[in-house]
Image (cartoon, rainbow, N blue to C red; front, side, top):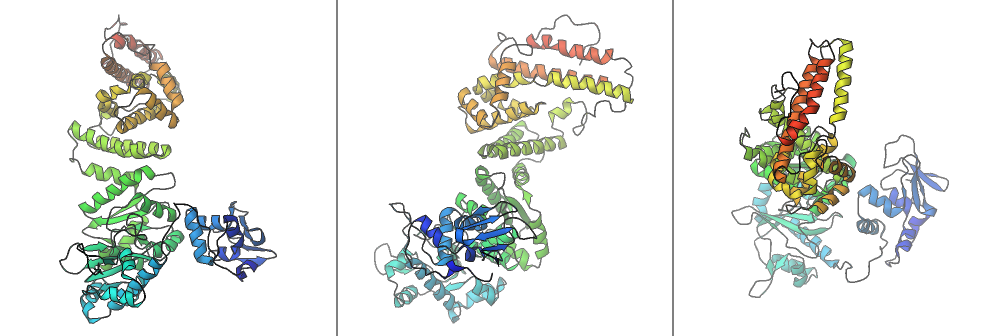
Length: 633
């Protein structure tokens, strides 16, 4: 950009006014020009839009009016909205970022909740980081230098990450900071010094450790991590929580990873400091939590940079458990445009060891094709059970674990998609093991499927069979409703029939969705009542289908069971058995329609007649007089 315009030259005093005054003083073209190459055209600046791919400039900055606009994608806003969009920041973060970029003080929120952080703590941490760096060159730090060399770090990398060494002397840091004007009590507040329990002079928290400075998203040092080289415990030690340092909110490497992550659309979540450094050196933007599991706030920070961060943890049992815990923690936060990918490294490897062994191409290939969320979660949970899933309890445990994860997902569209993905994977796994009851009931091998209507028949007879079966499908479409109607009216029945309902798969896709939501809602609340269930289904957009189910299958009706026959549980099980037999009749009709010796429509129609009349026998459990001819088996 040739220049920042008239606004860029305005004096920037330290005063803070209203938000509108702040926006009016911002040099919009100068700010946008940090990300977009702008060219002056009359009173405007133009360039290629940063929010969509284009070859001809359609992005315009109108500085005297304080807005930008793209005529290609419609992006529009002011300096604050631009920074929020380009760096995926929250409003408050964008104000702080603009203050940093321009030197114009952003307005502060008044009141007791206003942020009160002593800026001198940043200066103190920066001074301490420089002191640790200087100590790394001293003779006492030879073991630290040897360790870093063994880990493959050169001087440029050590300098880039500001690595250092904390000597054994308990008072050296305190004296060095005091010489620069930092009082010991401020160093205690920053977590660098610790006061003995019995009182006395503060002493250094970090001693005989390799030091990893930890920065916030704006690159300011807020704390430190220290690794011992001996047998001391803990192996890694972090700054305690302070005004600046909150372990559950920070990510190591975020300050270096943010810009390349946005540009490349790639962010790797690793386990430790050395993994982040190794990935960064190899060109993969990476972050890591600070010795604890990733929390909600840390996940949110990652999603501000990319839609699908890639979790890349050690390829051992502990790494898989950690990744699964992270997936469970992320489940409530999933959205259509935010998920997680997973990369499982070879056994015994981590990103650092893999890269040091020269297998960077292997890692690049893995990161290019991360395993999707649903696939990874299903695979890891499945691996925790026996290879054959022979026992019903194991299959029930698998279903329960999957339902628990799906139930945590708040977004209804993602929850429905995840439930369907798990169902399909579970069905395929049971078929592979020969345990799919539906496959067995079909009368074929576990992997078999009924062929298309009319397969192998002359064209005219195929059309007739297709029409017949289509009509039957329309007739049968809501006959599964009696399975769900009693459960909608009395969800407490699920305490007895949850496993049986989980074993079913309904033909009607709307009813199948209702079945899945019933199971999900019950897994979340075992004291579920009908009004709460109705509210849940309404929020999922299923109020109308639920009402139709209650109307179609809630009373005896054409497809129902005599309400006087047995308990609600017995009537429900009789309904399931009846409809299962009905589906057996339907499959027989498929077979009749596809038999090569069918020469008259009467045979399929006779099968249809038997199918429709069977309801009277199944409804009460006593067969009425049956038409002459063989009965279906």
